[in-house]
Each structure stands twice: as structure tokens, then as C-alpha cells.
Length: 573
Image 1 (cartoon, rainbow, N blue to C red):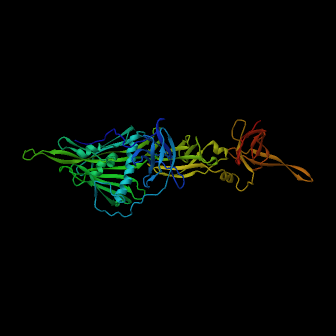
Image 2 (cartoon, rainbow, N blue to C red):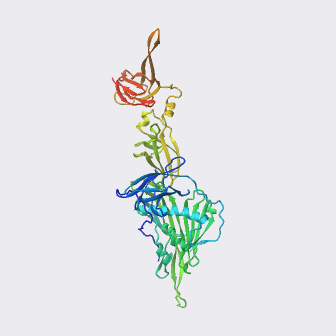
Image 3 (spheres, rainbow, N blue to C red):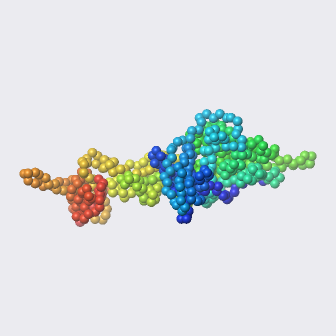
């Protein structure tokens, strides 16, 4: 019997500090790009002691925040690493006992440059490469992605929905003879897990014999990250060709002194982004009855919307063996390959511990933030965001964030509604978004700055000091009243030595089909506002605009530094 081992438990190698006890010392802060102050999510931040040893590590949140616990008071440095970018370090930080230090870590966005042409040299055995070599460069980028895969697995905060499969093929390895699939769902450390590296070094990657059956092990993130793996393999860079064009491979083979069954293969890194794409491997040093070169597997990696890296797909091919017996008894029984079995899986959905979908292979996901630029970019909670032309919509949370799943690829328009938009005279242009199924699109939707809203409401019609009044008119039954006249009136007193003169002035407009109106050019004076339609009239509202604020019917309302004022009116019999 041949089996593929998947273990259900793991002990994370890296440390995440999510919340420091009150008695502990910690550094919490924000990771941003120095040039523009943009927060950097999905980057590792590590805490280093005075000897350079890493004592804590964590992944920044989507908003770039981090919190790391120190084992004791002392002097530390923060080190950040984003995949595809160079390392950055902070100056020394003196951390007192029980202190939680706030720190803004600013980093330069200097991308890693992988060579456009890779020349294979002599394999480097038992080492991740000398500093400055292509091997060392590839190992650094692959190591960061693998470390994030292992770190994410150790947190057990994601719920996976996984499609697993097992397919049996004939002797040629192409014709499917049996196929079974099933769905698994639940919170797990990772959907794909191998054996401890100590066991692999001691026993090899293929264990057993043709009589009792063999177990085939695959290398996972902890194995590939281990010193034992690098000490037992040789490495050489290779440029990608064909289906691997645009990538650089870190090719590994068992060290010359390695005799146990092992793996050879390559970690493939995107040349432009330096992101780890996939691992492909074959079994080596296998017993002579096994078809070396035909058995092995592939593991694909991906970043999800939280910034974390996971194993997205995986598969392994194993031979199906049988013992051929000579009925005459003249020859000993011998093992024979009767076919092949593929086993693996694919992540269909991932949800966070709060239930938010962070990945869907069957949907395109749009996520982002809605902000109010008239209030300094403050997040807009409880805004309803919709993909126009579909039934897909969602409400923003308290931080203005939203997420929508769309069933199909395509170019959409995202729009949002909120009472704040209505209060500013509201109709905003939708935002174009392009979505791809199985991928994540992002968008920031915003109420524009007041100057742009005023220009849209009253193009070229406001003089210095003048304001805009917007609102709705409703009938006695609270229905919106279209074609109602809205009238604004005021008095201006002027004159000189010859005497004072008073004049009556007014502005008027009519409501649209949605009962909305806009009055432009409102003077910074005491004005009277009312509406009328079909013999009905609203009560008059007296507004007094000044630099100090606004008064409504002789009562101070509030400070009002803006140019747009909202005033709704109700008609009465």
C-alpha cells in the first residue's frame, strides 16, 4: 500500500505577539513607506536583541500595525522585511521594564532586483549560498515567503474550505481509472503538512518496502526552512523557460553523500516581484523497483488579502505497485508498477476568525475602504457599497472597510450610498473596478473634497463668502415632493450719506423627481427658506450664516466652517 502522509498538528517555529500582558514590555507601532507615509500590510517585523538574535516576530495587519513582546527590558532593534524589498532596521530602542513603546517604523521602498540572465555555476552544497550570490538572493526571498506560510499556519486563525482529491491512473500515467473528491472545512493550522524534518533526514522521504507498502513524504515550509534541509542539499540558480518563463528557479538536489531516498526539484520565484510561486519536486535515490523521475509533486503558494502567505494547491504522484509472481516458481516475485495515484487538494475559500472572506476560488472579491474627504479622510461606517448591475452589496464596518464577492470576472462599477452623501447634495460618480475570479481587487471609495462637490453643485456660480443649501422636500405623508418650489429670501441694507436703503432679494428653484433641490449663491446673511407646491407650504426656516457659526430660528446651532448646508423641508396643509 502506498500512502501520502499529512499530519494534522504543528508547533509554529515563529512567534506572534498579538497582545502583551500588562506586566510585559512590548513595542507596538506602524510600518510605513518613508516617501509617502502609506501603511504597509503583510510585512514581517522582527524584534532583535543587542546580539542581533531575533526574539519576536509578527506580521503587520492590513493597516500596517504591529505589536511585539520583548522577553525582558533592554535595547532592541526593529527589523522589517517585505517580500521583494530590502531589509530595513530601526535605530536602537531602549525598552524599560513593563513599558509598551510606540514606534513608527519608516522604511525605504527599494525593490530587490533579480538578474535578468541567470548563469548556472557550480552547485553550492550544504549552504544557502555566499552573500551577494544569486543563490543567496533567491534563498532570502523564498525563505521570507516560506516563513510567512509557516507563521500563518501557526496562528490557527483561518478557516479553510478545501477540495481534496484522489485519482488513480493506468500504467501510462494518463488515463484516469478512478476519481474521488471530497470537501473538508474547518479551522486548521494548514491544509497541507509534511513529516518532521528530523524523521526525513533519518529515514528518507520514501519509507517502507514493496511488501508492506511505502509512505511518500513531501517537503513543506518547515522542512524547506530548516538547516537540516540546506545541509543535506546542493543549490544552483536556473532561468525559467517555457511555462516557467519570467521566473528564476532555485534548483536543489541531494548532497553527494546522501544515499537515502530524497527529493530534488526547484523553488520558482517571480523575476519581477521576487514572490515565491511554487515548488516542484521529484523523488531521488529511490529503490530500483520505483520509477524515479515519474513520481513527485507540486506545491503552489499565494498571498491572501490579509497579507499572509498560504499553500493554495498541492499534489503528489505515487506509483501503484504489485508483486508479480511466477506460477512455475522458477523466479522470485518482483515488484511491478501497475499505475499511478495522484493525491492533493486546493483551497476553495478562506475566512478570518470574524467570518470575513479573505479568499474565494469561485468568486472575485472586491474589498476596500470608504472615506469622507470633507472630514479629512475619516472612515465612513455603515455605507452601503454595491456593484452596479448585480445584486452584490455590503455595508462598511466601523473602520469604513467593506468586502463584496462577485460571481464572475469582469469590469464593474462600484458605488456607495450613505446619509452623509445625501446631506452634501449627493450623487457621486461610480468607481470602475476590474475583478478576476479567484483573485482580490481593492478600491478606495470616497466622498470628494468639498471644493469638488461645490463645483459640481454650482459650477462657477459662487462668489467669496457665498454658500450652498441642499436638501429634500417631502409632502404631508412624508413622500418626496417633485416640482415643489423652494424660495430663499433676504434683505440687504445699503446706502451712504444720502440715506439708507433696504432691498428684498430672493433665490428660487424647483425640486427634481427625487424631491431634491440645490440653491447656489446663498449670501452670508440672515435668510428665510420655505417651500410650496399645490396649495401646500412648509414652515419658514430662518438661517443666519456668520464666521462664528450658524443660527436657526434665533438659536445657535453649531460652528459651521463649510460651504454646503443641508436643510430638509416638509409641506403642510
